[in-house]
Image 1: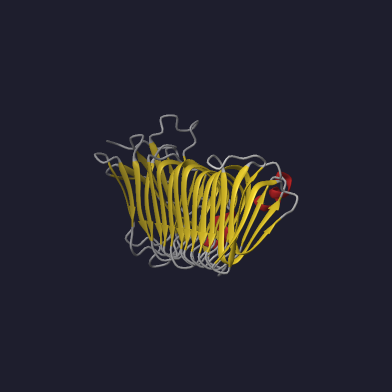
Image 2 (image 1 turned 90 degrees about the vertical axis):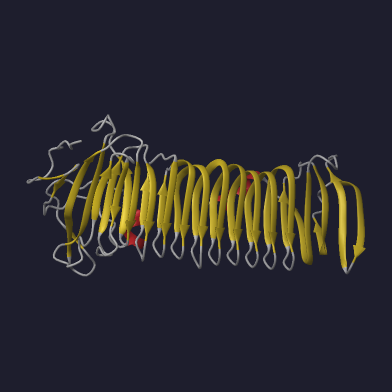
Amino acid sequence: MFALGSGWGLGCLWLSQLRVWARDAAGRWALGACQARLCCSGGGEGRPGSEPEVSPFGLTRQTLKEWALLVSPFGRLRARLPCHLAVRPLDPLTYPDADRVLVAVSGVEGRARALAGLQVVYDEALKEVAIVSDVIDPQASVEVTAPLKFDLNIKSSGSGCVKVQNIECDNCKIETEQGTSILQSVKSPQLHVQTKGGKVICLGTIYGNINIHASDKSTVTIDKLQGSSVNISTEDGLLKAKYLYTESSFLSSAAGDITLGSIHGNITLQSKMGNITVGSSSGCLNASTHQGAIDVYVSQLEKVELKSHKGSILVKVASSLQAYLQLSGKEIDVNPEFRVEEMDEAHKDGGVIITGLMNQASKHEKWIKADAPKGTVTFRSQSWFQSLKLKD
């Protein structure tokens, strides 16, 4: 197998299945300082002849080395790096056969560890591009331009950050330690993201069956998830999502808050110490917290079950919603504007239980159950328009 030149660079060196260009000109997007630049960069290529980057410490960053690998379509990228990594798709007009993987490394020239131990190889039998180094300069950044449909297996150590945008995968696995993971418009039937202390940020729409696990104080923030199955957990960090369109979802946090905008499908939410807020629920919802409060707006109802062992619960619904109600707590506060038929009130263990049918509902079709044995259950009316402010 041989690699075809693409017209880049000034000098060429043949190395087995890849062709290496080494040049001093800048022009590749580098991640740089992860928290600031990784989040806001568009990931575009620099123009030839553009000025080298200047780091916050006054050191000039530039492209140190580039590779162009001739690959088979529908392959896989395996990366093991302690530095920043960005992955984006090839331009289909420039590479209609989707048979290239382009790799560029930028950093501060002259540093002893700038490219230390870096291996960039393609295994034709495995259809795998491997980018591996344990000792490369952590301040370096690697940019990979791969075919649109390419599997990813990425592991970043230390504070190395990962950004993946506009890629379709059969399998996508990303692991970080303290670095941020950013996924933008990614499609994958099997998407797994794990971090031990970094942030997880999902931009645009993420499609597929999604598993995200964030340890320590890691936070997870999401624009939109759409798929069959979603499983997300945090420990002490915030879990926030604007839109969830799933058949089945399980979201949990040990001590962090769970804050959701518009959710659709069968959703289970659990938090031990945090609060749970849902801007709009359409479908089946089961939410429980041990010490936190629950605040939910029910827009379209199937079955809703809410429980706060030591906190209070606020349920908001449209005044025309049909539902069987079962509200229990130390105190119950129901807006008098609701028309509740067959209402029954009972007192037990220092609390009160109210049941009834709202707007001629059936007991067995659609119901709302809220239980706050140590707190107050409040039942209020809210219009769809009022709920929009919670989705921002």
